Image (tube, rainbow, N blue to C red; front, side, top):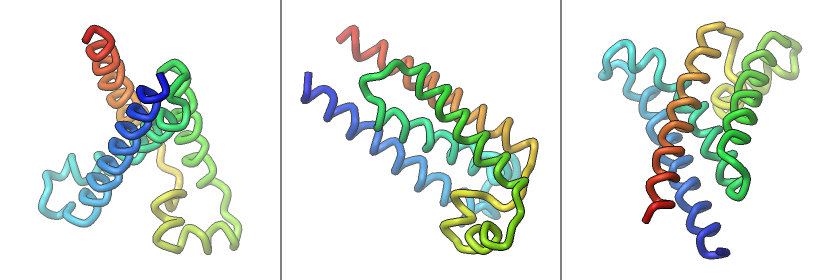
Length: 134
């Protein structure tokens, strides 16, 4: 059982790293991608990274728990962008702060986050069901 938990954590960690790489790629190479992809996929991948990160931490918990937590976290980050004080703006002005906290509230980001998390949850459910049968 312990080996299975460690294996799951490594798989979820790999999924987090893949989401980070792909998400940064949409930012760095956005002008070479279709407009829809460069405009929407970065935020969806960010939210997917949050989902897989929560799965990595909550491996023994049900999938729905990570779904709810990652949606709550992502929405919380987006709504926090309505808070505009000098120190928060200074943090957001850094590269890491901008990537983590974002720059400004956009309603469309909530749709992007939801799509990214639901997609990752769906993939996770399919793969979990498939590997339980093996």
